[in-house]
Length: 60
Image (cartoon, rainbow, N blue to C red):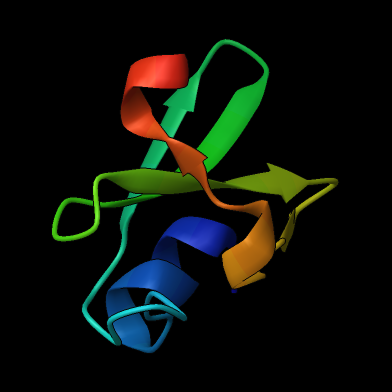
């Protein structure tokens, strides 16, 4: 199962518990929470879902 499939199936934002949106641009993979306005990185195929590491979407 890849990260996109995991996001669609069961990954949620650790802050608000809503669904995440998977996005890949070039080599970068992220999971976006539209509700909170933040994103979480995916490193080597592993989602880093720590609320304290969330970055604002505007910081990209």
